[in-house]
Amino acid sequence: MREGIFDKSIIAADCRHCGARNERTVGWFKTHIETECDNCGAMFGLLKPEVEKSPTELDRTMGGLRAMLRQRAAEEPPEPVKKKGFFSR
Image (cartoon, rainbow, N blue to C red; front, side, top):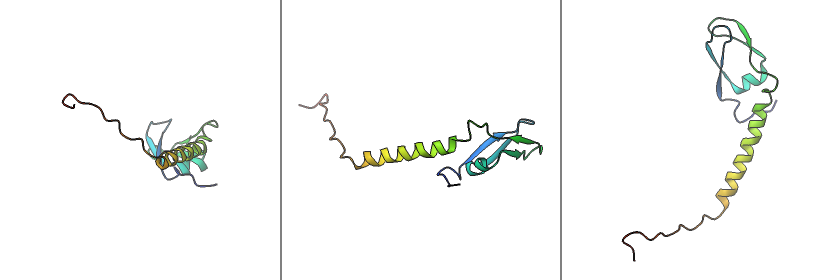
């Protein structure tokens, strides 16, 4: 599986049994269906099937955003508009 730009980012999942917060990386969440709670040891599911695609979709969206920002950075900046102030003639 190709590594995405957010694979090293840390996100949290709350245990459905004790409510403890369990932190894992996005890359870890992509490859595991269940996790063991760090607090109580209970196994619980992490992602619903409709959510499993979101890291890839997020990577694609961020790629489009980066391309848009590069394009805007390459464009010539507009000249600032000179406003007449209270004391200007």
